Length: 125
Image (cartoon, rainbow, N blue to C red):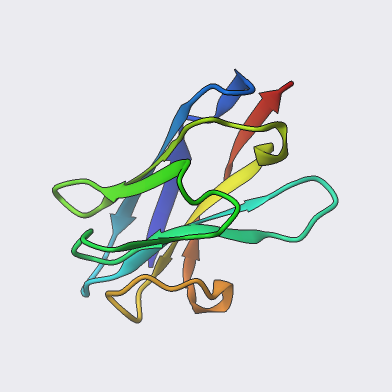
């Protein structure tokens, strides 16, 4: 079982930046991919981006491509989401997730085994 804790959310004006962090802990016996998802009020949770174990390749949703960068820490148990040029439509609860079955990045929500509690990001216009 992996425990995930997100941090770094908050209130920011449109055009601003935020950096979210996700820390993983627990008994982890394999290399694993990690991802970010978000859920806006009244909407379904959606994929934001994901990164594999090596951190060498990340994939992004079209809605954030070019504005967001995902990275992993040296110890691999942390993941970051750098968000720039934020828009009001980026307002959502952001969740990190771990896919313990594969070391690569995946966009499929159902592939993820562990989830954090989420961190609120609010972008004002």
